[in-house]
Length: 156
Length: 156
DNA sequence: CTAATCCTCATACTTTAGGGTGATTTTTAA
DNA sequence: TTAAAAATCACCCTAAAGTATGAGGATTAG
Image (cartoon, rainbow over all chains, first blue to last red; front, side, top):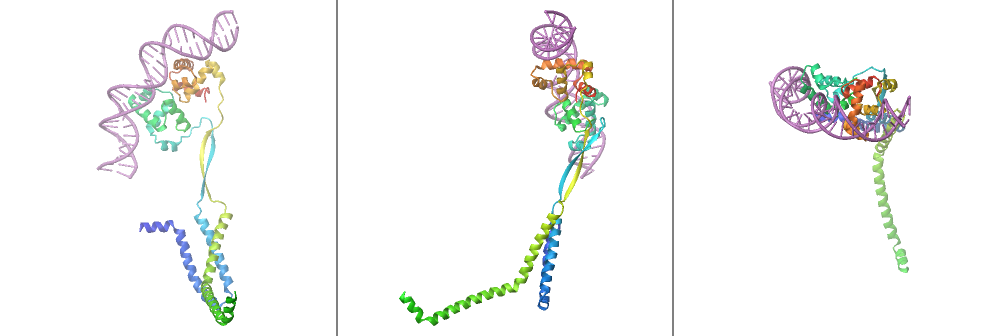
């Protein structure tokens, strides 16, 4: 059932086109009879088909063309000193709140020991946070971490 | 040559009859074909029109409609203004060219060893420069030196 | 409930950074 | 030219940073 449904959904246009053709066949047969009687209906018939299928072609083209996606990077200038946290990057890099906190203090020039005291945790804890941060930011040193984080607007 | 001519003359009627039969067979076959085509000519004609005008419709749609585009605007925040080196501070703090050079590389996240290699000097030389820099900037660590220097517009 | 994160901490070890001291060689400016 | 500043380097030592591994408690999403 799921497969059928899926098939129908995916090939909706093709199915519709098929149904339309079937309907046309019936119409043809019916018109054939009429043709016997009305000799000059042929031009009208041909014209109708032309118009109908032109419309069908247009509809198909509009339905089936994939819209192009154009990414426009709009540059927004900010005043000096205006920091806007890039939350998308935080999510992308999977950086936790605590790690960000450590990163900030690190960028302010605090030593690991000072950060530990400020956050009421042990020095080892800060070191662990650092290691995780360096991993996530793909850097090797705190100075690089600060540089990268600033570029990504993770810290001011 | 004489033989052939003789044969044709003697059996003229038979040959003609044979030829006529052959012609008739051809005619029959041709009529049969024509009959078949005549029977279905209408459908073929209609089908041709349908296909042709479907194509025409598609072509029209693609030609005459603007290409479907979805614009995705991404805001990129850029800080207004460029970096202007604060020479007064450099003079005030009495920081030499070489020291500034080291400071810059330091802020880019390079280790002392990397800076030494880049500037073709020994690791000890870089350490000496650092010590002088920290003294002049009145800081204790490289991270603080970077912070302070950025605030003073000594480095970007 | 439970699997997955997150935060925490420890131990042991290596590497890098920084402090102190002293010295030599360029460069620069009076 | 000559003293001052700048740049270079060495050695020794300590402090801080970073790596690796393991592990327990708290929180949270499925």
